[in-house]
Image (tube, rainbow, N blue to C red; front, top):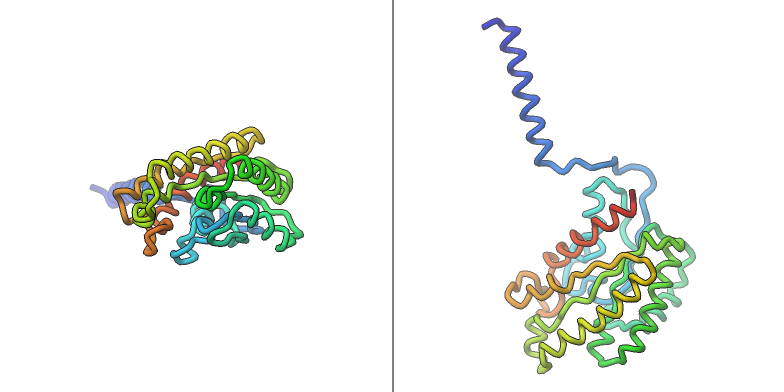
Length: 236
């Protein structure tokens, strides 16, 4: 065989190997360059990432997922605190007195309304107001607001030992989520249902943080993977 033939065969082999490697590696769809897109995350303990490192929290993992896909998302601005209800989040947003719009906004709120036994009518009213606030901070671009459902804390070790009926907790969570979904879709905003997956924590403790109540980084990663496609679609 001539050296030229050997060289040609080697080149073809290397080209095939490169194609195989490219198929296994997620190649960014667009370069992560230019001005970073801003991100506002509104919520409670599920947004602040109670009991996990900041990088494992839902907003930071969503940012990471989007950046893997070639987007350039800045570190999120987070307005959230463990224990907050809808009215407390509203008050905190007013206190923050933000004077800018954001390229994207996520909203996840309501578990503490359920935990404290607040009326569902109050939740509907205040959630709807918060959703409108989120749209306003997204520059009135509904396509860039993303609502996430409330997870079911009743299946966690804390929930199981709380003395509360797990079925009742689940039913109440579902009722709150039904309200949020109805109001979200009525406004033409994206809604992602992570609640069914959260219930896997009943048999998989790797989905629960060390406090026995809040999601682990593993569960937050699942949420980020579920929400990311909706964001990517809106960013096209």
